[in-house]
Amino acid sequence: MSRLLEASIRLKAAIDSLDAAVESRMAKDIGNQSDAAGEVETLKSQLAAVRQDYDKLATATQTVSARLDGAVGQLRLVLDDDREQRQA
Image 1 (cartoon, rainbow, N blue to C red):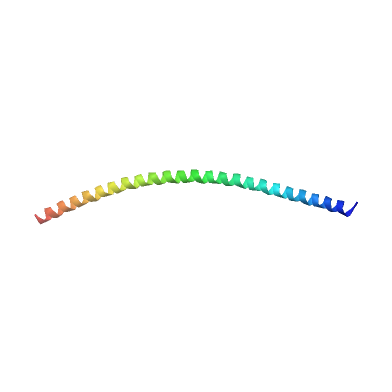
Image 2 (cartoon, helix red, strand yellow):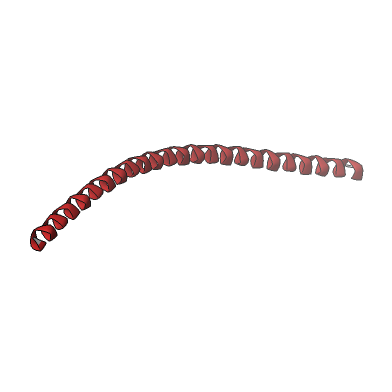
């Protein structure tokens, strides 16, 4: 074989090797993007669940706060009545 033909064969092998490497890398990147997209969807659903929990807790907090305010108000009335009876 001539040197030019040998160099051409080696060049073609190198190009084929580079093509294979690029295709492999692209396939990995596509797989990683699919994994990332799946992870994003999972995180979105988890975030939605956390927001629902937060809303429920906020509602419960408001209810408890109102009940505590009512109980404190009743205790103040009882204590004020008790003070008035002692003073009388």
